[in-house]
Image (cartoon, rainbow, N blue to C red; front, side, top):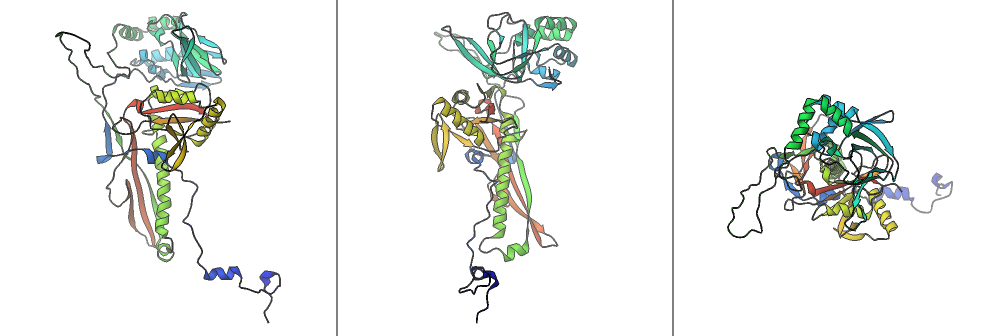
Length: 464
């Protein structure tokens, strides 16, 4: 007689229990999955250039620097102060090597606050001061050719107006500046500049040299201009010219990400069927190294895209969220834009703005994936672009390829024990505990060949 089975509350079983049957069955398995990997569109879409010798030199035509144009401030007890050394970002003070005079200038700025809609400067009125924007966002406007007011640009923290007060080059304001958000500005009056100039012989001589020395001929991109002739008749003498080069071009050295993968030999010997344990461990490790690689390509302070965008290619939104017009402005500043790169939350915010404006973004198919696009340019999601605690992020737009003087990825192939292009897996030994160690390394960098190859829309609001 069959005894009652305790697993069935005392009832007699009539067939084999499934728990016992599984001991004789082969379970259908999946490879190990992880939610911490993304599509890594940047790595997939960048053209990769071979960096022989572990370095890549970017030669450019000679460019005359005129100051980066982005000031920095310190805040304490509700008071904003410009960092004295940051005043060298103003074109007229770029080469002034006098810390005391810079400190005197910084101390003479007075703080003012404006609300949304307040007028800070008025075109055509006397420009009696220089204005630095310490906090907030300002729209610059001018009268159009037919009498209407046109918006020219949007300034944010670090911007400035009226720098000509230092040299007296322009007695009136060229634009009208209107606060878009609550703003904190620092103002330096023309009278204060005159007082400091009278006391400082070095500042006076420096500004006199700026006024008296004509600026070298340059293109709109700041490059040394070449002398050319056109539209002439007869046999006039033709100008001679040459293309001058930068004397100290930038070199990008390959960076790397590494780790040591440890696998017990007993695991790889006995438990590698039907899935190879070593291969699965390597696959998951390489995925994480590739994730770190893309993070570094965007955020590394030395070569990352967010830190290497030219300040003239950084723009701000006209409002807070990313509007269609903001992306149009990004596209208008470069040719052959290949793709946008944005955090998924930023893409969602852009979609909401398109819905609010009653426009429909493009739908672009790339490598079998359906993506959002704008003006035919795909918008790739990238969760490596940071979103601040205030809910702001950035949108990047790239022109890629060496032929188009764009953005290129750098790597070195043919390295010893290469497992994938630019990635090596090297057995470093087995210790006395029978644990095998594998050194996994990936070498990479990214280079921006010309300043207009990369643009950034900054301080984009992503919150609903």
